View 1 (cartoon, rainbow, N blue to C red):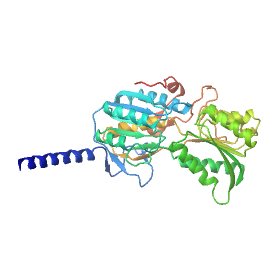
View 2 (spheres, helix red, strand yellow; view 1 turned 30 degrees about the vertical axis):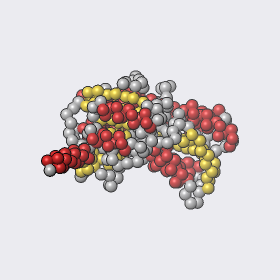
View 3 (cartoon, rainbow, N blue to C red; view 1 turned 120 degrees about the horizontal axis):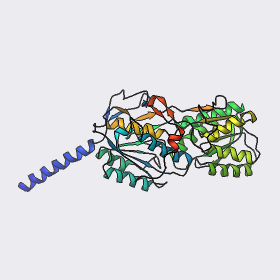
View 4 (cartoon, rainbow, N blue to C red; view 1 turned 180 degrees about the vertical axis):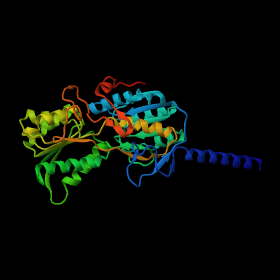
Amino acid sequence: MVWTLRFTGLACVGLLLSSASALAGPKVVSGPGADPACFKPWSAQTKFFQWDKKPGPYKIALVNGFVGNTWRIQMVKTAKAFAAQPGIKENIKEFKVVSTGTDVAAQLGAMEDFINQGFDAIVTIAVAPDGFDRIIRLADKNNVVVVPFDNVLDTDKVMMVNEDQKEMGRMSAKWLMDESGKKGGDILEVRGLPGNSVDRDRHLGFREVMEAPGNSFKITEVVGNWDTGTSQKVTADALAVHGHFDGVFTQGGSDGTVQALMAAKHPFVPMSGEGENEYRKQIADHAKDGLKGMSYGQSPALVAIATKAAISALQGNVMPQLISIPIPVATYKDLKPGTNYWPDLNANFFAPNQFTPCGVNFTAPEIMSQSEKNTQ
């Protein structure tokens, strides 16, 4: 009987501990959330989270994946610049950066290591949109705030920050159709890094419009990895095979795609591309020759907003589960030197880096003076 009672008591203790673990992490609460001008809920259906308040300053890690293109390099530099800004640095005890490559297991391992080291928050660009359930549970158990941004996860269990990737694809398709005045023709689609939610969602939004009833576009699809050199090569290869395109949609490495068109002496055509400063310079220089370009911006400064959101959550504020960031857009009709592109800067970088409602404002020298190297 004594053994039975002891066993029952231990079982109850275990059940209580298990329940406590299950309840760790954020609570789902009612909105509105903190600073809605900056942390705007994605939709009216977005739920709200609240973590237990922790005393600062905080230990925060950026766990990046791929770092082999201009956008990722600038993103890492932006994260370091933001962590050093007045008003932010006072809230950060330690800021670490690691880039793990395209292997999901390596990224998960790095996140687990930071959790075990007692870090308070992890901001991350997910290598894949799924496979993070175990890490999310571990973070919740240890009251660690995880904030995916850019390449986000297919879950509503963590707070995330992003621009509407499908809408970028949709607006790109509409741009090509409006500027060409056609509902058919040969289109080149230069995709991003395979396996990421950003590449997937932009592609789906683009095809949703281009393949709508009444349209008859023939789309040639190549993989540019969001990289200038790769995009230039795959565009050159596509031109060598197909000869002519009536329009171009590229997810990144946009200036490389334009360079390939010029090298092949291909007539300029309507084009939608990313927010690289070099691409915007090309549009400004060649709009009169037919490069009717649109430049949408997936800003590397998303990392700053994700970091700011992590700090706000650690301070006990109510936060939207999914935070919507507006899409900055510039076209050949409204490019202004020194405002939305910089003609005198030769180093390539992504031009959109200001989100005034969030107090996120960077100068190019401030960002480019940082290093993209790991800080572990």
